[in-house]
Length: 188
Image (cartoon, rainbow, N blue to C red; front, side):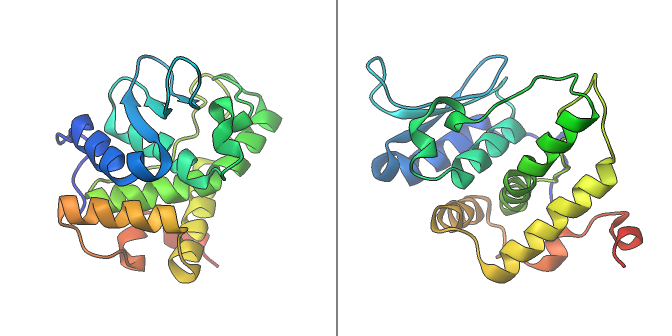
């Protein structure tokens, strides 16, 4: 049974799990940051890549890790993977574009959350802007999770899911782990 969001999850735990899993093979570290998350590739000042997550929030760490797991080799050579980011306050068109590119990372974040024993909810990341249809967005993320469960996760994702399951003593993922209230009203 997933733990509630308000139960203590140590940022240090997920930092250690990630760094023990990927530092040697990918020269990448998960790093606690300040107000904004950032992916910083290695450069003259730092000899390793950094996934910087905001405020020490466990869920922020999982979200930023999910983006790293989605990014391919070339994308991981660019600041924030070379993607655009438009801050809070997006209009309907920009929010739709945002949600479209967030489906895969949030599906992976959901799987990571379950592997850590943590409840998950999608993030529209647009508190002062337009949220088109949160339940419809969650349904798209859910469908992506089902596809990943059926077709398989990438090798890096499988490696991290396994490390989280081992650390948090959670079972292998199953479809039942991803059901959510309201899901049945959306499925035809």
